[in-house]
Amino acid sequence: MYVCICNAISERHVRTAIADGATTVGKVYRACGSQPQCGRCKPSISELLSEAKSPSPAMPQAMFAMAGSD
Image (cartoon, rainbow, N blue to C red; front, side, top):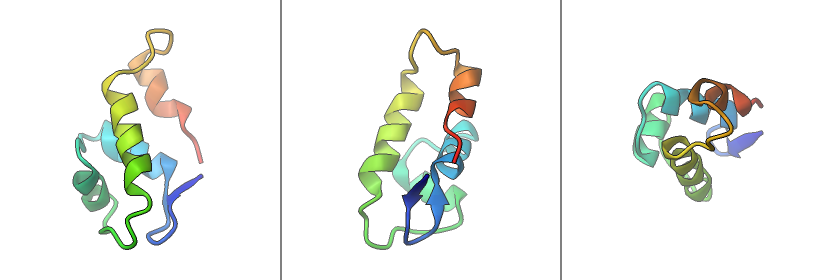
């Protein structure tokens, strides 16, 4: 699923950037080689960042990174 239509950034790209150490929306954009355009994706990226900081106890961190495929 696309998170950012303007930059063609998928949920998988965002999760990969987070797994590689991106901790802010700006760092996710940079890791994906882009920058914000219209900004409508910022809340979605922020939500994925929040989920990564506090994964569900039922889902181990390694599986959490794999859970969001395109």
